[in-house]
Length: 226
Image (cartoon, rainbow, N blue to C red; front, side):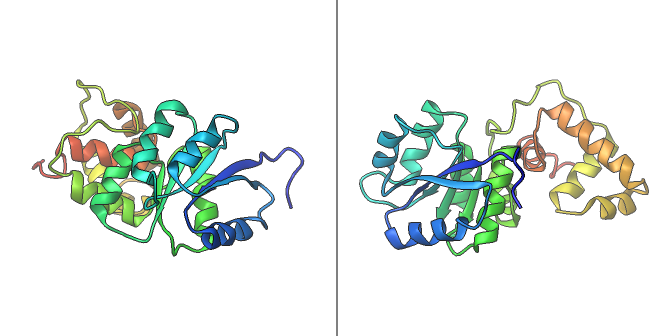
């Protein structure tokens, strides 16, 4: 049950298919902490509506007529940097995922995702800025491995230095190992691994595990020999 002090997250759905918008809206209607406050059928329509109303989170389709999501995304981020944007598409092309993340997307979901996944993505993006799944993490690793990019998760200090233990933990995180699995691999307690993870975030300026993955890729830590 919704608590009186529970924050309601205002959401806009932007998709050129009315049935899809209606389906998502209906699915989210049962969530007491989510409110769909606006709908648009293309990027241009969305930008016009944003002059009058700013949601907390936008569900933005990639492929639309007049102005698609890839074109609209950087415009929204430039004008309304605090709005979180979850990109929706029928495709699962990892190169597309990478491009969207570089343009400032806060999450990426295929349109066949069930309602609970969409709800979780909205909540996590609103509270923690980014929502990542196995698809996005693999895309970051596979497509950014040989590219130098500016991380959207926080600027990395040029003079950051990680010790061997921190690099080992970071590599294991990039392999999607759990805290317990990492602890067993390096013979440390789970609590110590949590401390190392927090220290890694502080050193690299990252806000999330995905930010740490970006750091590891940018600095080619996955290719180095210890």
